[in-house]
Image (cartoon, rainbow, N blue to C red):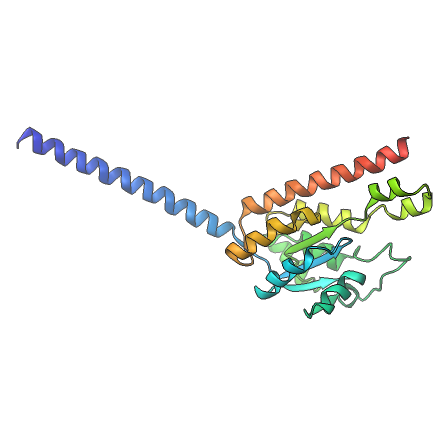
Length: 230
């Protein structure tokens, strides 16, 4: 066989092999990403600042996401014309202690923390009728702004968010399955994701939101510590 032809055959085989390897790697990455995609079906919304929230809610509703909420946020969502289940209807407990306890209940936190891929978690959730919560949108009480605007200790103490910070940490911990929006600063990033790819997120996107969540909770607790330490 002519040496030049032989070289061309080997070169063609090498190109074919390279293409096959690249294709296989690309296919693997696509399958991996697709397997890590999670659909947002139910959103728990509990926010202080509602400005900018309406556009996000509209896009989520358009993509079939159901809403669950409490108090003023539930009323706000309902007034926008979207169905919104009250948390107290899920838990069978009203908001108590002047609003200090609203979402702190196993049916809420179980729905956030339950691992979708762990059979024992799924069995317990079914046993206790705990619905999955795939998206948590929180905006904390304005503690720093309250400290800056008043010397009234009781008013300042009441602006220490308990339920909200707990929701943030729970959803961030379970980022494998849940999206956490920890402040109004993250409304826009989620809106852009939903517009681009519907009510689904990648693991990388959920991990980014979790990072933002722990940054938010760290800053919030640092501000509270600074107040008590002065």
